[in-house]
Image (cartoon, rainbow, N blue to C red; front, side, top):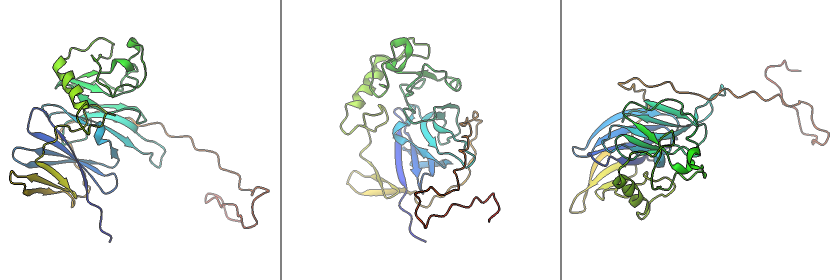
Length: 280
């Protein structure tokens, strides 16, 4: 059996508490969420998903209690799919407290401005959300994507002077929080495609290499905290009840192509046999 490549680790830190979410990916697109207590270096292994999670569009609330993420689930054999979606959960679980099916990946995910206001990076927030937000959380949007403010296109990646609620009113946010997001955008090496998702304050003591997590000491030596490579998919149930997850309707089956060779087909061409029909 060939050796598997090392697991990919992406880490999102909470701003106000010593807590982080680790997204461990591999093999393929299997992703597990792990909660890391950065003070005690204790880990809580959470749920897996068998599809892609866009880590650059995920964010952990400042208190570490909520996690907003964006994923894409490919079509299933029956033709149904979630497509692209945005969800909010309690780490280290993917079970959604809130779910919005957007079917594509033009946007998606979000940023916690504070512990209550979550900036959803949806390109068309004027449309009805798939479900009301979880209790205690308020969805806010970029004014350039809201019809009440002239909808100027998909500009959710830039920090505006203010954000708006679903009804188009200015959200009650502290200017210091918006200024902090704007400062993150100007940090060197920051991915400006999705504000708030980079790690401009990534601690220099945190080292990720070959599927392993290390803590760099003051003398420059590195202490192995955990090797995540041996993990394999296992079903894990969340300790709370989630909301229903929507799917796209089944695709209509295309009509079968003609089994008669075209006049210009080469002599070696043979029509395909339909397994549902008896053979000649």
